[in-house]
Image (tube, rainbow, N blue to C red; front, side, top):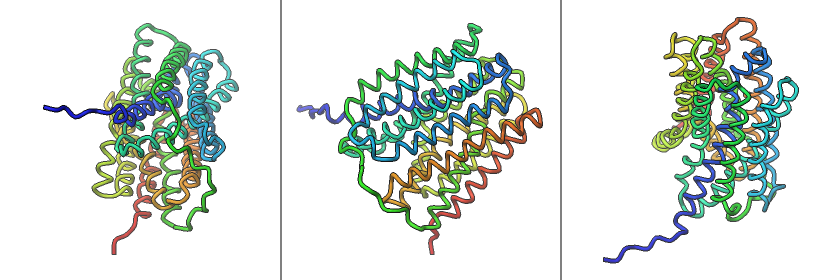
Length: 391
C-alpha cells in the first residue's frame, strides 16, 4: 500500500498559527493583562489608590491605541517580521522594568510603552500569520492565533500561583513575566521565519463608505471597549477586596484564560450559522451577565462566573467586531481597522478612569461593574441595530 506523501509545506500554516498564538500570549496575555493579577499586590505594597490603578491601566490602553494606529499605516512594508520581533522584545523588557520602580510616573510611562508594543505585535504578527493561512487555505486556524491571549493569561496565572505559594512580592511577578516573555520571543523567532507572503498592502485606500451600519458597529465597538475593560482590569482586585487568598485570585484569572483559548473557535461556528452581528451582540450580553455576576453574586461563585464569562467573550468581540466592519468596508481594511481601534481605544481608556472614581467614592466595585454591564447591553443593542435586515 502506498502511503500519501506529506509535504513540509502543509505544515507551514500551522507553524505560523502557533507562532501567532505564542506572540499574542506574550504581547497580550502577559504584556497587557498580567497587570490584573499583579495589581492587588501593587496597591497593598505601594499604597496605590483605585484611581491610581485606573490611571496606570488607562496609560497602557492609550499606548495600545497609539501603537495600533501607527501599525495601521504602510511605513513598515517589507519589515513586518522585524517590527513584530522588536515589539515582542520591548514587551519583555518593559514587563521586567515594572519591578524596578515604585512611583506613579514611571509606571505610567512604562505601561504606555508596553501598550504600544502590544499593539504593534498584534498588528504585524496578525498580518504575517493571516497571509500564510490564506496562502495555505487554512483560514480556520485564525482561531488558534487569537487563542494566544487566553493562553498567556492562563500561563501567567499559573506563574502567579507559584509565586503566591512562595509568598513572593509583586515585583517578582513582573520579573518572571519578563523572563517568560523573553522565552516566548525565542519561540516566535524560530517559528515565524519570514514576513507576510506578499507583504503588507501599502497602497492608498479609498475613504470609508458612508454607511450608517458601519458607524453603528464602530460606536458599538467603543462601548464594548468601555464595558469589558473594567472587569478585565479590576477582577482580581475585586477578589482581594473579598478577603480571598492569593492562590484563589490566580485561580479566578486562570479561569478567564482557559475560557478564552477556545472561545473564538466556538463563537465563530455560531457566527457562521447565524450572523456575525448576532454572535457579536449575544457575546456582549453574555459578558454583561459575567460583569454583573462578579460583584452581585456573593462568595467565590461571583468572581469565578465573572472571570469565565469574561474570558469566553472578550476576544470574540474583538475579532467579530473587526470582521463585521471589514465586511462593510472591504476596500479599506487598514482604514477601518484604524477607526475601529480608535473607537475601542477611547472606550477602554475612559473605562478604568471612570471605574477608579466610582470605586474611590463608594469603597467597592459594584457601581463601576454595573455601569459596565449596562454599557455592554447597549453595545449589543447597537450591533443588532446595525445588522442587515431581511425584507
